[in-house]
Figure 1 (cartoon, rainbow, N blue to C red):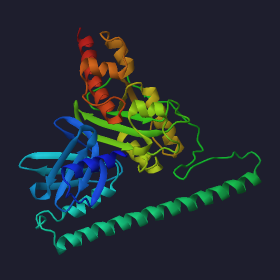
Figure 2 (figure 1 turned 90 degrees about the vertical axis):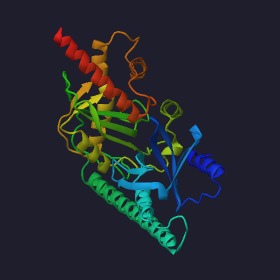
Figure 3 (figure 1 turned 180 degrees about the horizontal axis):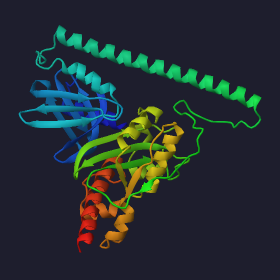
Figure 4 (figure 1 turned 60 degrees about the horizontal axis):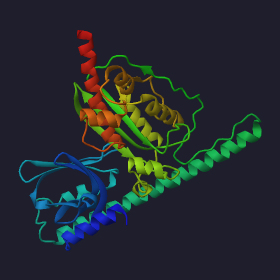
Length: 365
């Protein structure tokens, strides 16, 4: 049984009369604990369910005081205020459910406890929105198909005219760069408390053949978190058992996630460029970053990178090794799961702040 099906089963066990109009994967934070589960929305209630933790959290629409949303490639969130000063933030992997729930939220403040023609009207709006999104997806797929056919025909024509032409393999979400891959970046020797942490989860360790399945990005300003971004991607090849065991990311979970594309890499570049990138074992993450920017022909300036692993080896001697998981436990850097890109980013960011303090202390001596 899929995770969302288990969540729905638990929801109906607790609330048999719950009639969900919208069902989608989501994450949220309750009592300083991150949960990954499902959001179910009806005309009457908004519910978050995590069967793995036996958690069902239901909020009647009538108790929701404020509803706000943020949708885009790198941030798909819903912000709810309810019951006075309580607030919850839900993160989604796609903008589609955010827009659908937003349409439904327009019934807030009306007589939503008694289904009426008004409710039927909003249900129809949601169905129309879903149909429009489906048609849009089909149109994009058709354009990608035509693009592949055109590039294939051009490639075959050129190969007949020039003996030196190379045979190029590609998928529908790839472009091909004519420039050589450059894996160079500037290694920072100093760090201020304003930086951006980057972490990738991948299908393997080889940047030239494995794929990115999740990225996490957390931006710090003066030592405080000001932005968080996370996105999952469906790879062209299935995730292996070892990676699934380490990361907890399954092929089932990635099935409805988007493919990594030029658009995503451009947005990621915009979030990173001009800032100092912090990463633990930076060569790993930077190779995957630079390789995919190159693959999709995304121009970029040379990145400045601070490797917390390098400086942890110099400044920390009280741990048996300098793996992020070891440092995380020893210094209580984060309460999230290891090998989740966003949680690893937070742990790495807190480690960077610790290293800044130690570097400053060393200079003062």
